[in-house]
Amino acid sequence: MIIILNPDIGDKSPEYRQILDYLANKPNIQTRVHVEAGAIRTLTEIYLIGDTLSLDKAEIEGLPGVERVVRISEEYRIVGRHQDDTRSVSFEYNGVLFDQDNLNVFAGLCAVDTPEHVEKMMRALRDNNQACTRMGAYKPRTNPYAFQGHGAKCLPWVFELAGKYGIKVIAMEITHDSHLDEIREALEKTGKPTGVMLQIGTRNTQNFELLKIVGRQRELPVLLKRGFGITLEESLNAAEYLASEGNRHIVFGLRGMKTNMGDPHRNFVDFAHVPVVKRLTRMPVCIDPSHSVGSRDHAPDGILDVQHVTAQGVIAGANMVLVDFHPAPSKALVDGPQALRLDELPYFLEDIAIAREAYEKRRALTRRFQEESK
Ligand code: PEP
Ligand code: MN
Image 1 (cartoon, rainbow, N blue to C red):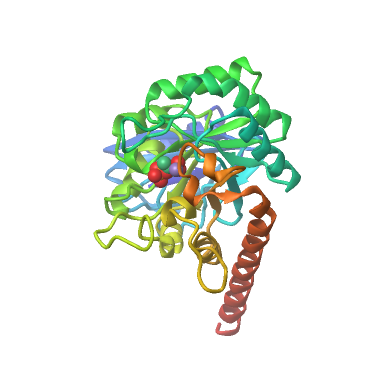
Image 2: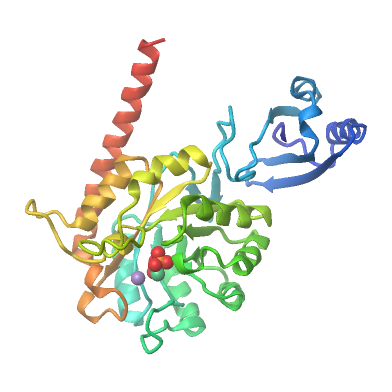
């Protein structure tokens, strides 16, 4: 059970004291408090563990300072969407809003290579009014002899270039807790010209120790990719690991699944699960069309498969698109064959806008239908 307090009823207020006193008189109930200090308001939630079935929901809702009480199912206690629970995990990071209702595009390099390429990418983003990007500094590679990413040494200049071009959030994969320290240190040293969303890649979805460490810090938000060979439930539990350690600023990423069916795509595209994840949890949902499709193949209509699957995810309500671009794909050190070119950026963004508009029209249509059928 979760007791959601009215905004700005903090853990120092008399109302809070009164609620805790009330609970202290109930047998076998433990409490755990989560305070989410936002820029505008602070939200406090009291998690009740133990014999909550014996509690009277209406009575608690009648206590001063209580906004709502939600009975939670066992699954995904924090990130889950429980019965009558309309809340979404909504958070702002470095001026960018993430929730289940909006859409952010993170176009950028799969792997940071040269300062020239990074600068060209960021300039193109600025020229197209984009405030987010992806930049891999630590690359988990199948082949031990393949380029592993520039690591910590590229961070200062990548962050400075991001600041120069007005980039607010960089999605950056980490594969070890030392990478988290390196990123924080580089952000500090460069005066935080930009922000970083820590990406947990599909190979690390169930790296529980990494999840715990990333979840324990609440400064940087997290993009958690779905594990490519595990069930959806297992991947959602991985998100719950992050949240249970304290960090709820999580975006859940779909990136295609490994199947034994092989071609035509690098992974079996799973964007039909966008609405499923939104139904089961309150997290914003990201799609990664590049790592799903893995090529620049196109249909006879001339539209790239990467674009087709992006549109499919966006028309189903995706909240973030993580996509590989490169100023010179043939020179990219990682995943060049799936990268889009910079001259394709405005075209790609316009294509996304069409799909997003269609999604919004579908929502409006559904609202109208529901109104009329009342
Ligand atoms: C990536 O986004 O660069 C990446 C390696 O993705 P994934 O973990 O989905 O394979
Ligand atoms: Mn890649």
